Image 1 (tube, rainbow, N blue to C red):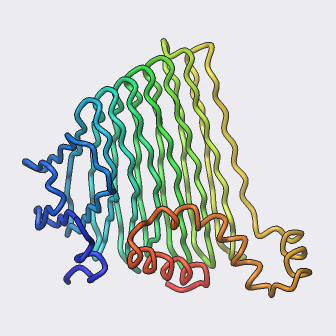
Image 2: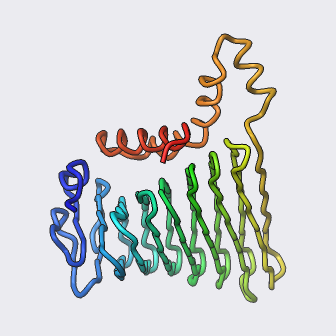
Image 3: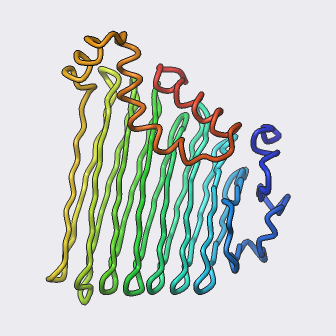
Length: 301
């Protein structure tokens, strides 16, 4: 099954299946390792569409600023391992788009190791069919390392997601912020385990978690288990989780202003969805993702 045109024709894209098929961005590639050794003014689309299991490593050199859009396209069940190693004073901005289909199992493990004064910014969108298992690990190894993660998960039908996010603060003055936005319709179930660990000798560090879930079906389930493990003094750590159905007072207010029930619900949901979609610069890809998300929200497979 060939890649759809909206992915295979992305301008400046790197295409990877069982092997590297195209490298229009001229990234350094050797033995399943991608090296980002120069600043990228424009975001580089990196399409990963393996059959079965696959591993890739991404490395930044010192002081470089890189921008990637990693598109994981699961035509069948996959088992993917991604590792990121950020050198000191490097900055990496990643958009993840996970696209999978009904009755498929998407398993992904990501490991991110951040050097001194490095910055990692991630915006993740999961629009899956079937089962999604995602294990994300972040090690803030160098002092001053900074992580910001924003995630959107949209599920419906009988979709299932098991997501584990683990952040280890292993040096002084490290900062992490996780914001999860979760939407479950019909019979979908989303299970999230979010753990922040501030290790000894990691003073002046800050660890923040925020989880919000929107239930669009009477039998849909969102379960979030936030955890904080603090082994050091002089740190800031907090977490929160708010999960519920569409707010009736908000619905009443918007309907009193002339919106229908469906229009009001779409407006509320857009507050979860649009911040992610607004970051997709390719118009065709954004249109496809928007259509798939709208279908999920409406209850389609």
